[in-house]
Image (tube, rainbow, N blue to C red; front, side, top):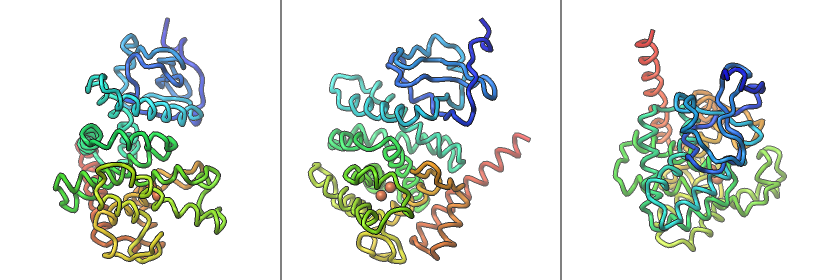
Length: 336
Ligand SMILES: [Fe+2]
Ligand SMILES: [Fe+2]
């Protein structure tokens, strides 16, 4: 049978590309997975509730960019994968190789987004991904943390992973290469928003400019709620708790909850707050919000608020983007 006959007609606008690393051979598929045959034509490579058997489907291995799910299934897919990953990490008898595969899958999904937006190179992302993976596997309190993380919405947990990667890219550009500092930065970034699970969904799902004053003040409690939740978890360093409490502060004192300024914010907090804000502009939480390109996001930050983030931290992020832009130009001119 030809591939064309097996394909389904589906609107490109209603399909979402995901990383193929998200799927582990043999797992029960939470949604039907497709590869794109041509515009508007998709071939199912695994049906919802079936066991994934990609090894039997030769085209799956030839897919270099990603596979597709219906956009309406995306949240469900990420939620199932987050739950599965959490369970896998907590299984003492499951081989480390399998655990690694689950963590890599989730990371590569967040990573895919950054790569598509040309923020960084595959090699850099793999390095950052490996770093987060190691941290998850070696940190003794990760079992408790992953339980808390898995209770976040799919969008929020993906946001946390993306923020971790952006934070680490900024830190490396600032020559913060000490393993202990990078560990803290990645850990704090991964769990900074867990307080959101105690903010009612009706408020969380609203764009901020549509919130009433009361709803906004409830929403703005989440950095301190995150700290409260984490106080019960063993071995979280105090500077990680501090950076989490500061992740919505900004240099001009218009942040929350304490409205502290620039150098009063801890060095890790300065990086996290910029990475968080930047990530929210390029990968917004709310459907229908404007999606900024990285350049538009940088312009928006400098033009709209003057200079809301620490100068050195902001320049480091600009350098990350500039270096990447040069790398892409070089790659394109070599290919021409
Ligand atoms: Fe937040
Ligand atoms: Fe955040």
